[in-house]
Image (cartoon, rainbow, N blue to C red):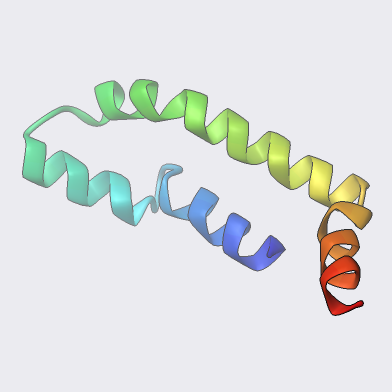
Length: 68
């Protein structure tokens, strides 16, 4: 779960942000505008990542509950 969230953060953050480069090319919008639009989602993803690292029961609790 942490790996997936880290990858999604990496895809939308400069300088490598592959998704940002594709969106810039397709929509003909500047990188600055797209980064400003993505910022609320990036902050939310970072917050979720921080919570999952600080409280591992958020990941393991539901898995244990479903496993019985």
